[in-house]
Length: 231
Image (cartoon, rainbow, N blue to C red; front, side, top):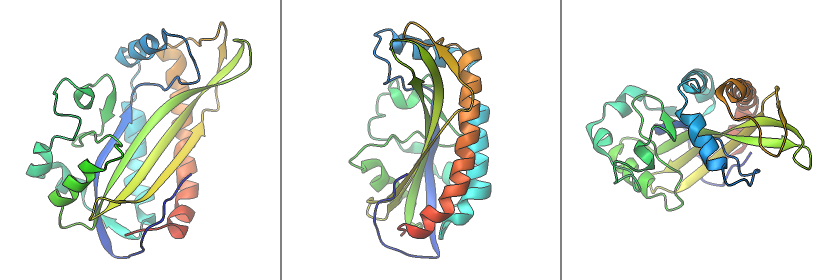
């Protein structure tokens, strides 16, 4: 969990400008060269349907989490139906065949664009100009990683779900970044150094990890927001 320092304000308005899930499971704990092919095949599998998991987190965010912020969120329809937002091409997404438009990598909530977490914050500075009636913009995204327990290629693996909720002010500077993570309750065996990366094995663990993450954010967010910085 992390919150960066910033200035405090109340009764402000913020536009959520991206809300998506990364479909590519992070296998950074595994070193096999074929790992990239494994996660690509998994994300291409229609049985590996993460949409309900993202939808559930999205519902909790707006119905439960949002009330903890000391500012109002702009109605989603005012974001999705904004002509300038619909025409906006994020930095790094100029190539229509690039990662932003690759449905194999990212799963956005309908109406949202994928805004990747670039350090320069150039996208955020452009977006706050589009939503100049707001005092800031917010980005929300979720991703998964595979974690292992054991040695010498033996042991078990779990899925860890991660969320990032970041706020930027009118200058495009980051005010806070709330990062949470939670591991799945269920697990799979690890033999030969690589787990079985199939939808029937991985999806239930993703579901379990998301259930845990939703509970973790629900529990921690009020304290983090209260003790942290805002606009």
